[in-house]
Length: 118
Image 1 (tube, rainbow, N blue to C red):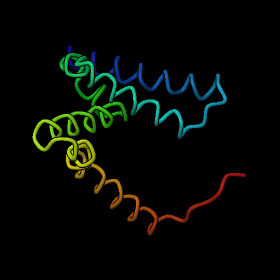
Image 2 (image 1 turned 45 degrees about the horizontal axis):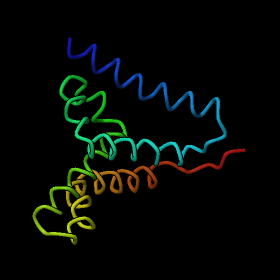
Image 3 (image 1 turned 90 degrees about the horizontal axis):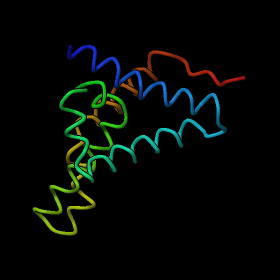
Image 4 (image 1 turned 90 degrees about the vertical axis):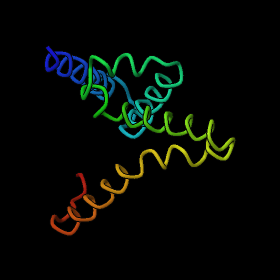
């Protein structure tokens, strides 16, 4: 049953993104930022953990989960360090993922030749 929820929720997130790409003039970058903000909003109102409880990787792996991780880190750091934590907590919580993304992007940039769209 877990796999079904993961597939349905993850597929729903991807479907919403694809519909926005096809039906609107919104750029991919703005759609990504919107998904991050949705994750931040869901974490801020306390709903993300409930959704994550049954959707698991379906909501945690897409960019929505990254936004929630940023918000969770910032909220926790504000409680521990005060206002300074609002600026540092999100990066502390997601540093591993960011570092991995930069590392793999560098490796793939060395392996493959980038081409521009025509």
